[in-house]
Image (cartoon, rainbow, N blue to C red; front, side, top):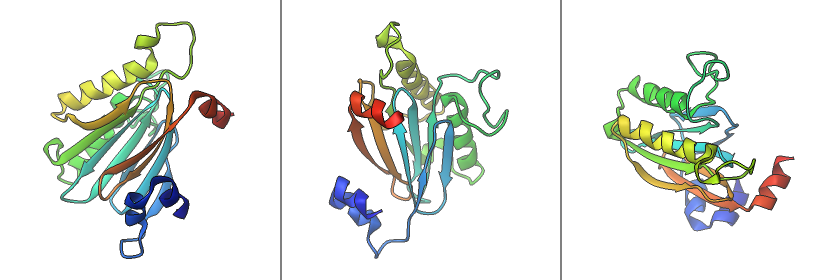
Length: 187
């Protein structure tokens, strides 16, 4: 992963140095979720989808999801209640919190961050409250209900985002992807 250090400078390079534990890299697809108990760099590409990261500082563990929809609809969602796919932010956050709880880690021990929710596709609908905004609002609501408030966020706008989440320190490195670049990358 040396190319990451070139793109993101010395901070990420510090995470990748030979003095630190070896990191494994995981590319998180849409409707996916990763729970990392070992040092991992999780990357994903977002448009209107939302990624939420949860991090436990005392145990150096983290999780990240990439959800497409704000709410679980059984006819299209295949979360753990259905088939272990995390299309909705609702099911994704619930599953991450459950995995932390199984290890004795509860919301008071976690830091949350929210990313994504851009207005990438224009179908002529209200762009101020499209699926991206609904995803962000639902993620914040679910975190609030669990007693978590996002420590930071980078949401909305018209640009996609490339994220790298360093699971054992909770850092997220983000690069905006302009709409024309995002469209050509998705082809």
